[in-house]
Length: 208
Length: 78
Image (cartoon, rainbow over all chains, first blue to last red; front, side, top):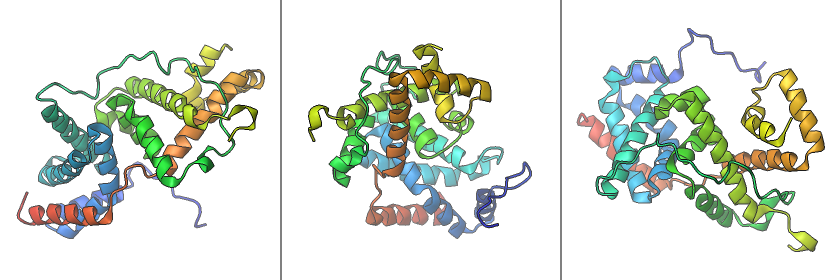
């Protein structure tokens, strides 16, 4: 049946591995395929960390170039994408350090915030909160909301909840422990929820 | 179960990583606690909204430009 996805066995090779092997054999079009497959995701991760469009464009380009250059070092014991994300995260952090004149910037800095530990705003949301905003207003709200979070929270939320990586893959890509990913994810989710509530909560007295 | 205990398991509940016994306890708590029900529903909605919006869109001209630059450099040997 077409709707049932085969369960990937341990010995089953990820399609990216075949592409990587082709690139190693000199087939540049295979790399082209890998770039097209992941460019949007890498761009978003770079945006989340650098918070700057120009930097994100440069990071995306540098990350793919560096991955090509280092392809021999890719062992194949993790997914190609996880490996690529790690390169992009390092490039993004380097870019941030340059911008902040050498100040260390780290993704594994554990940020203790009071916010989000206990939900404060417990008003329910309107049944379809998105209908009060245009598409561009919504995107603006979502960008503004996530930008208020520490970089380590933003990128964990992006990888786990938006891109759908597992906790283990996220930990590997970011060089964090599994408990650190879990702790950041919970706080990121709760803080985003709290901040979105300011826009989406059900208004009292029939206001629109 | 207290609200704090519920909150500590919120992620596991959302990610469907709780066993049957814990799920039953969580559901019992939800049944009598509007606050936790709102927290669960709106947190789920938060994830859903972010997942369904492309907040950092990559315009096709920029994509093509960067793509050409990457390919050009790779052909020369990076």
